[in-house]
Length: 435
Image (cartoon, rainbow, N blue to C red; front, side, top):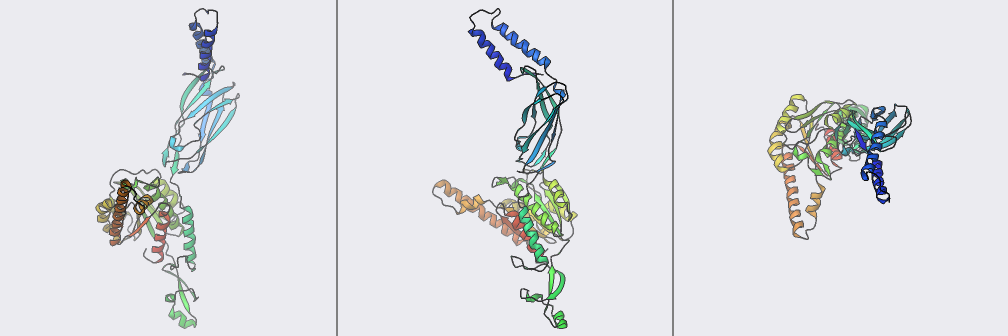
């Protein structure tokens, strides 16, 4: 299809202005000027190279982390024996935040070029860039030919693993505990017997093996290592309570970061880790494994989940979990401590799993609400806001207390701390033998 360029508009306006200032009368007046411009444009369109002679391909990594960076490249090649001026416009979703989506190139005969830009995705999920437009200018630059073509691609934007350093720190700490050194928190080193060795001043006297001491005439202690081959199942709530934002980020994003942190630590310590994502229905199930690829499998299972604005079916999720995972496990429920939702859905369903499994309920707290509850109230609006914040925190505390009364461990942490504190709760349960 013919596409007028800016140069054609400039030429038409310039010709009209020249005609108006000329003293001599031109036969036909402005109609003659317009006819000449149209004829020039038509001739330019006829002489313009066909867009099909411009070959375009795009390449980028298959996977990009949310808020990370990736390079997108367009490879453009001129298959004709003529010089071609080409314009390329790519169909890229605005949330990919591409540095550029269109460009202009002057390609020599049989020449090629590569154009690069940076992607900084602001939303998780699956993206399918498909169409792009190629426009080729005529030799006069007045009119161009344009064609749309399909170039299907797939880009997966995974959740960002912001707590990676916290995970590595806790893996190192757990390994230090495993070889019998004291941790920074001064806790024990597991419940599986490892070996006997001579007593040192730092050892707990309750670890003394009196029979071995009597035989060797030296004080001998038992050392223990953290249990391996245990099972952690992460139950990711994908319902409406996870759609709310905390710190400008949906709650589900904080929960996914915690899922990646726990999975990394657990699998590196020899435990099995699995995932059940649910709302009204099961959305994803990943069987527990301690393999090196488990973090990738869990990431693939949840990266394109978006919270459904429905009440989550905890009873159905727990029943499905029990049917799949019968061995005693740590079940970590990532949700929010909304008193009404907890009281009506989670609390009635919790006894289904708490009799056999160790249950942890984790949620991210809102620091803005905490600040409003403890801040001053200089006017009526601030006073109402403070009262509402105090009420919200009290309701949250009641929801947590009701869960603890049923034997669950509750982790309620601010943004940026949920993954670390939840991982600490897992390591504490592991070290004290509760898991």
